[in-house]
Length: 246
Image (cartoon, rainbow, N blue to C red; front, side):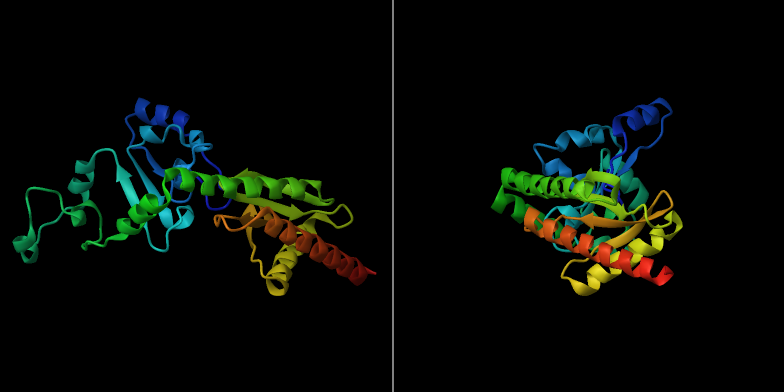
């Protein structure tokens, strides 16, 4: 639910039906995309999550939290207890049979208060405000996608989803086998020459550029400037390549 590469979401409801049919444990990696649960507009993309036996959620990725703030949520807490619980002699004096200790739910034998900062954020901002913030990042990337689609020579390799998009420069005047090298150079020059940082990744064997916005302070104007820089650098890199062949 929200892959790192593209932000894409699997067909969760269909997978849940398959898991239930064969008695399989359904775990959902919602480490990145789980924060879409905050959004009143886009929460429907998470439909089927309630069918999972467990899911992972990192609020430090898209949930306004500093690192680290992560959790695993299980429908049946006792299954986590049966998996992780241990009671060595040196913990005998602090065991409390009236409740389940946090260390019995995972591999970390401590009681960190990571949930406190998330609770404070929700109390201070309210879920409506957080929803608006999540929506804004999605809208920003949708607008960026439209600008890239309108730019000659550029192609979208995965559409905007959960604040992420991938694309590449693929001009007809350059051989396709040179596209990977070309896009690597474009991304490297952008990162060296501007304040933006865009990483490259690989989608279906193609080297592409990945843009991800999970900070609501990034505006349409900011992404437009980055895209303008990309177009400029791409044109310069293309000219240099053509000149090198002459």
